[in-house]
Amino acid sequence: MVYKISSTKDLIDAINSGGVKMKHFYLIMSIALGGVILDGYIFATLGIGLPQLAQSFHLVGFSAATVSATMGVGALIGALVGGYLTDRIGRTSMFIVNMILFIIGSFGAAFSFNIYMFLLFRGMMGAGVGLDFPVALSFIAEHSKLSSKGRNVSIWQSINGLGFIVAYFLMIGVYSYLSPGINIWRYAAGLSGIIAIIVLALRFLYMRESPVWLATQGYLKDAVGVLKKNYKMDVEFAGDMVNNKVRTNPVSAFRLLFSKKYRLRTILLTIISPVQAIEYYAVIIYLPVITAQLLVSGNVRSLEFSALFQFFGILGPLMAMAVVQRLGMRVVGMISSVGIIITLLLLGLVPVLTALASVALIAVFIFIHTFGIGPLPMSEASISYPTRIRGTGSGWSQMMIRVGTIVGLFYFPLVSSYFGLKNTFLFLLFVPLVMFFSLLILKWEPVGKDIDSEWSREDEAILGS
Image (tube, rainbow, N blue to C red):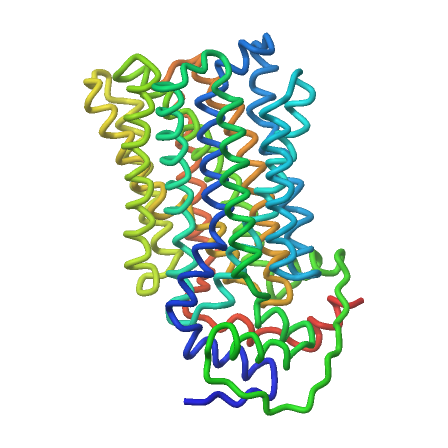
């Protein structure tokens, strides 16, 4: 079937109904998610290398917690700016910018000779990651057909878990063969720069601008050309439109998120994005520390068990992908919230648990979290807004996630040191409770909806004002 494209709606309908051919889609999705692997990798190495970093720069207490949170601050700033820029200058331009930032930050951090230099470059790495998330998931959403959009954007959590596993195994190699001593954090940062160079090279070679973004910017003929030439879709340009660049006001873009039409979904994302991140980064980042406390001693053994845990962090999202198109993100999130409540209660209230039982419950916790409430905010944000403000909406959600990231990175080392590991799990109960009741009360479900059809001339007028 040949799709005749004479309007932006025709192009979006063609992608929604037929989609990009799978061999092309899997390639662009894999490359788009390269930054998500780096996010998992670098946050994993933060938990691994913090004790040695603290020793190198004589950090204690609050100053050590500040180092942990620095990348979260950078990611927050990157998400705030990057979401809008993703809509303003395009998806592929941001794909290149964020990797360049990450490469500079990685090698700068690896060769830092004082804590201030390290914080600067660590923040730059965070900015690169914060910029990457909104554009990556927007890109995937805009190349997916409607019947699989919710499933496709949900895969990011599995890829993030893969980044953790890559980090653990690379650090096992460093510990086993290079004997780095207190310099493990330098190896970790340098290796992340090498991974980022590979991702950047692949993006230069294979990424093309999102046809949906091009069409909504007034470049419909160019958009049809990308679909036909690069993705081999059976499309023909049948319009008489000339290129007509549209205007975008950054203040108006954020104002639209809270307009009457989009307010409910934005409020929901504003609530659930930071709270789930508090839970995730309070536990997942410090898996090697938790594992060492519960079961084993020694760096290599602790990393091996942490890597094993993260396989459950890959299985959870894959299980969600199998049911999310049928159940919807809201129901999956509520099921996950209930499971997390039960798991945290067992971890915190059962007076005597064997080390093996505690470790098994941590694995269950990771599986249930990544099944629902973990990937929910970013997955939902990427398909809850029309293309013209999709990057801005995803960036807003990513920014709120990074608020939770910062709190979570402070939370675990401080709370666990004062109240112990069991009480730390109990204090985290507020997260699934807030998630469950937010999803129960704010009834928004984007799966299966043609969100771009909601865009109106009134929205366009507000955006350009």
